[in-house]
Length: 229
Length: 230
Image (cartoon, rainbow over all chains, first blue to last red; front, side):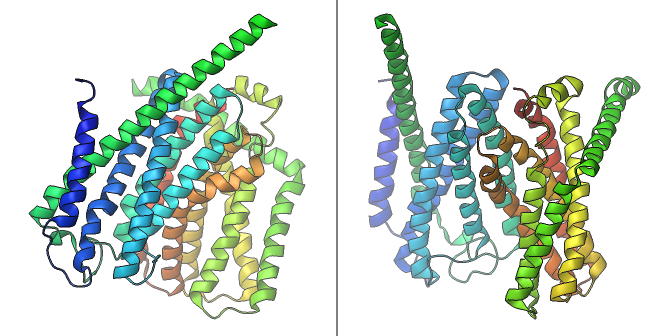
């Protein structure tokens, strides 16, 4: 029980954010109207994605420091989880953009950043798939993960400052800016972020256990086959 | 202490780097076909673009086409940079030189190569399609800075791609997402050079490019030993 409290917490926080997110009061804004509630879901996906990517890159660094296979598996699983969050964020964002900006896709630095993040991590999985040797795969993939992550952070950290954006907080956007989120919205938003991050960690840990179990099964299968021969 | 460092680490490394760059240049000179194949690639691509467009009046389109040609030419150039080091010859280099100096030498060499290619591309491209650039020197400065960023990123990626089974396709797949930040900055910077804005307007872009360059080289320096060991 002591080990599992955070799983319950994540379910509680997500349910809270869904219930209060749909039923609670939100500030009335032009253009956005009630769609402002999507902030609880769309933006928390990006926060969760960044958290997963950061964890993944930390495991990659730790892999290079000691070459333990566990870290490589974890880096891979967290990157996959981050990619899933980025797809969810993309879908929620696209629908929101259609109703507020009038198109599913706009030329916006944040959207370009998303596209690049997704491309980078898809390339990461293709890179992993292209090598057979377990150690070589882990090492090269860790290097690419670190290299790509730093460039991606530069990209999403620097570029929005160079160019204009429709997103709140960068450039002239009449509908919404960062000061429009009042304290009642923050009371839902931050728990939602925390809830989704915990949820991501939870799913990743389940996938890690499954992965380890499968590897053990493979190992035993090979052992038994060798015995039989 | 500093003097000891210079004597023990930096000086031998510089000598190694110079020797490696000389080796690469000599190999390139002896097997001229790889350089000329890239050149032919550029000429053919420019001519195809000429046949499609005849002339381009829109500055944005001119710029976009120029950078598309340059990006793919750079990917092809840098993609071959570890062709000689794969296979058995790899072991020879592995024992001969530090991985860091191999990486730095390759980056410098690729930078020189991509600079040459990009200057030639600029000339041929202006020859066929016309040249609406209003401050050419500033444009060339952007091209040189941008191609050195390309060379840093592409050298690391090509070292990664050479370790995999199908490196030609993977080279493009791995490098294009990583090149996008550079491309966006470079396109902004070169557009303002095309419109003849003063250099001060462009300084932030150029500084971002230079910072990105330094960062890529530092990252490559730290990570390359892990790619290099077999």
